[in-house]
Image (cartoon, rainbow over all chains, first blue to last red):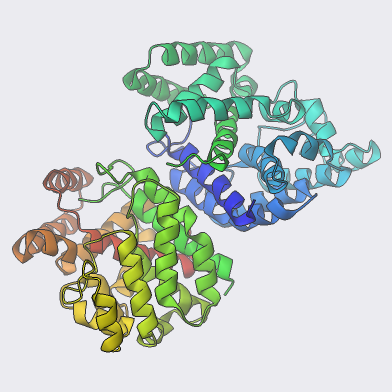
Length: 278
Length: 278
């Protein structure tokens, strides 16, 4: 498959995800955060195109593509971290698409090296993010990289360690199961509702099926479970007004289901690659 | 200047323009038309990346790059024409940027050939658009292409013919004067207001300075002048509520200042290329 086509599907996935509204708790076309604004997400999605294009023809180097994506993303806008979690999913998916076999993503991540883990830590340093951090190997501890080298930990190993408390890492070790699940939901719903609403439906479905780990890390498991239960109610009784109210409630609390939003980017990429069109 | 950098500035210009809201009368992040929706503009902007990249290193072929942009744009979404007028401005600007001299755009358009004119007509055929049509050489008349060849009309000649009633064509023969003017307004306003509001301010400024030719072609000169006078009042008494009301009024009437919106895309491109960041 054409690498520029793959890259553009990944970029459009980023745009469609951030544009979908109301997307309870996260940045969307009608909701900025104080520091990170909608336009920052647009610029980030545009900026990373050439990195994805190179990733689509590469056979290795996930870690450095993740680092380069982060660097390019923050070069194009002034909002800081916009897509860290999304890049963790998109880069291996893009590489798998470049193999003409999106399902090869499992092998792509299993084949990562110690060098990939080191590059991943460099990416971290560009933007101190909460999501995806490996608790035993703190990003703030300069010894972490030495420790990674000493223990010969690959990026896959790091993801295994953090998979218990981070949904994106869990995708890495579980064949991107939920990301593919989201793509199926999207494909089904795009025939029944507008592109925007199909994305919101998919987001709420994924959120309802598992507590969001970003909310969990900020507010604890109980809160994350409550948010998921509410998402479940909202998809059963589809009502954009009620979804908007929930959005306002989460925004007010600062409770953003960021891991779920990242996953929807991955799901959109798979669906677009499969031929879905806005 | 790096061709992928140039292409991405052009793509981001398209995204920022269509996202700015409330943009009286046109599609924005909160306003779809019945057939053309916001998401169609996002997909179009993503789709054309590789065409712009090739245009940035090309020395000739404006006409075919315009045709390819249109074809790629409609391949990526189901809404039809989104960016025809914008491509007419962006393609020569991208080529000029590729020369490391954005001001060389005047020479770039003057150097067009009869072949460029023929390709432009092919682009037209993909999407019957109102804006930019050359009245004497109807797009619906299969003899138009023969007539262009017989009279040896270049694309610049066609633009000269239509410059009296089409603002985009007028840019071609006047050194992209208003597009550059918009870039100056943007650069000034971006220091004083949000990215979104600076774009709206620029749009209203350009609209106030000259009647929009798309409105003129649909509703006549008198209506176009009225719209411009109203835009003038709105920038003098900056009030987003009043701008929203005007937006609703124009949307209701189907009066969209499309040529002015296209010009803002060009202005944004110049400003982004000059280092402005969202």
